[in-house]
Length: 203
Length: 414
Image 1 (cartoon, chains in turn yellow, green):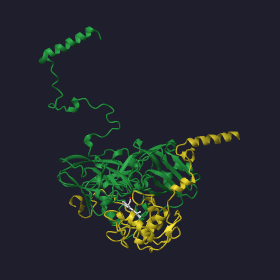
Image 2 (tube, protein in one colour):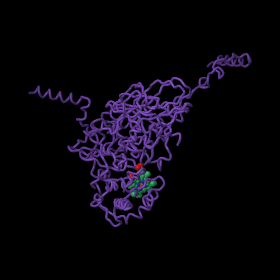
Image 3 (cartoon, protein in one colour):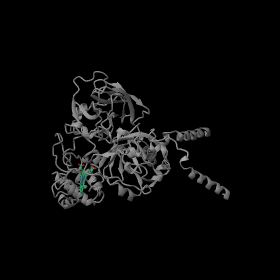
Image 4 (cartoon, helix red, strand yellow):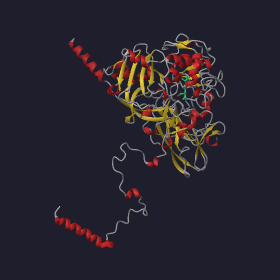
């Protein structure tokens, strides 16, 4: 009986020493995160709206703010100034030769737009918008893409219900099988003549 | 010193002065004329002249470079590793490519915190002191921006390996296994995904599958023996070997466990691969096998005809490189290159092969095969499958056109 228990103790000790099995062990480092600390950093918002804060606003309410804080880069109509990214346009053009990927043409989830704007816009001043401001600007960017009316109230109850046109066009591959594989061949591998498609020195 | 000694010394000095031209002649050796340069004839710099140390001033053009027209601002931009000037497989820290989305912060490690919470038994906050107390591990892995080669989809554009392939680095990373940290907080059943988030102003967030955490993911604080550089995530960064660079969240401040992915902006609006039919590949994290010849290349041409050693790099997110073949005729005929040890998993692998240049035009290519049997595809194959608008995951075979002048140019073949 006691020898069995000894054996178990030895087994645990050896187990603890085994490399790779350290994962089963805890060290007691770190301290408990307080609810306030978690609330301050846990601001992510999911496609179904989980994580959206209270409050809400409309595109109409967001217009002036957009002009002041966003339009210098993204343009009055979301068309993008210079090389800054556009936020609107490109409707139904993803199969074109030069598609324009915007909130309207490409983004699948409206709540994630709120997450992104509140988190990191205006560029270089992330986290400077209040929740209501972030709602108003989310509404305004959606409005620029003809996805909501100017008076539609955007809040935690409505945002995830907005139908984003490109929602169904993402295929998850989860890092699995490669889609394109080369051919392994050592001699006389090309059927036709070798032709230059493009030359960087001739641009 | 006695008076007598002093006198004696004076006498010796006077004697020398009086002797004048009769002074013993200096060496006639060690002159510029006999091929001895000034650095051999003079005292060098003392220790401590460069407390951190820096490369020779003659290497001053070996630097990261950016492409000004590529992005609207340097704060959300990229600089490229000068692959043509590097040897072996390790990227020096000062030359490792940069990619930031809101500039890079200068974080005080004493004030930095990592919070792990969500579907866990204990929501915990760790200081850097806590993190370095955990059992540490050092591993060599590459990190590649998934947009590496992204400018080449429509045709050969950037005339230099620094710009076609330079969004890659390979380093020895030191840190804690992510699984060790997860054991510390206790993962609740049903937790399948981890949201990793940075402490920069982009507050970059990406979803990582939990399998990766229990496979080989690390939370690292050191790169090549020293603490991470600020531009590489100082003081803490996630490392998910073989996965696209963007997921290796820098300035790591938060890990949240959850049951589903978050579908953040960086895994929906960006870092998804748009195909010709309007559909987009999503969560295409893994880097498939890829290789490139780093000598010769547009930055480093050939001088005279004769024998050379072609050198290059190969890598794969799926494990080890199995072989690399090299062609000098645009992919008609191939020869197997030598893999120069070490050949490590999810790591750059150096390859070399002898080649005699006859002085005529040549089309140099390399093609990697990884341990899964995956073969690096041609650009034409990739374009046929993915069109020209997918931006990311260009792992095509690179072609350098060597002209009779010895110069090399970036070209693509049909």
